Image (cartoon, rainbow, N blue to C red; front, side, top):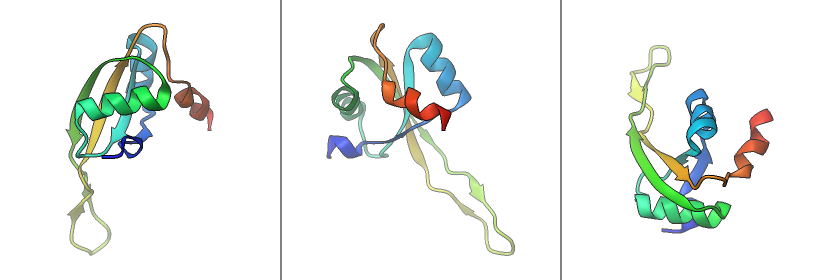
Length: 99
């Protein structure tokens, strides 16, 4: 698996912002097939930081209803919470927060 395609996008939610400020952790949406080791290598290579740990979880897709059409579900996806060494930060996330 190409390490550049593992990280899909950062997640900027209220909880992710609190994790970043208090625990030096960052939250990403990643490919469903990616392992913790692959996610760690991808973050280290993309952002030039030392990763201490990776926690992952699968998020179930929400129910989607539109008019009289039969109900369906959005696809399931995977989230990764990455712990970075103290004193290091991922600056790409800070720049996009204002837009």
